[in-house]
Structures are given as C-alpha cells and as structure tokens.
Image 1 (cartoon, rainbow, N blue to C red):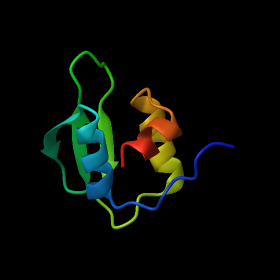
Image 2 (cartoon, rainbow, N blue to C red):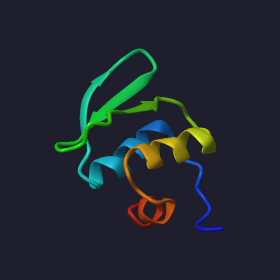
Image 3 (cartoon, one colour):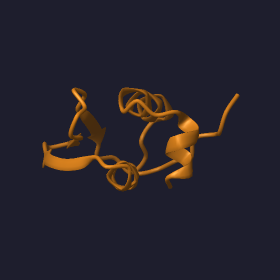
Amino acid sequence: MGSALPVLSGREVVRVFESLGWEFVRQSASHIILVKEGETATLSVPDHREVAKGTLRSLIRTAGLTVNEFVSAI
C-alpha cells in the first residue's frame, strides 16, 4: 500500500517541495503557489495547519512524484 502520509501543515509541505526543486512564486490569501523549471504544472498548496491527505496526494501526483519519494524527502 506504500508509505503512510504524515500530517503536515501547508508550510511544511512547501518546505518539502522546495527541497525537491520547487520554487515559491507567490501567496494568495489561502494558498502558496510553487513552480519548477521544466514543469508545466503549478502547485497550489493550501496554507492550513493541516493539509488534507487527499489534497497532499493530489499535490504529490501533480509534482510527478510517488508518495515514497515525497516522504523520503521530509
């Protein structure tokens, strides 16, 4: 079934994606926007105390990562 996703805040999620090469571009009222050179996708991370597991899974998929790759970058 793969690695269990940890419970992370939006800012913690952003930190992990930044360590994987994603860059902060801007912040809207409730979301942090990240881009990566060579990627057409944009990540919109909710700036919440806890990011929902489904949302986190979707962000990981959009970033072209597996859950294991994301978890090992934490």
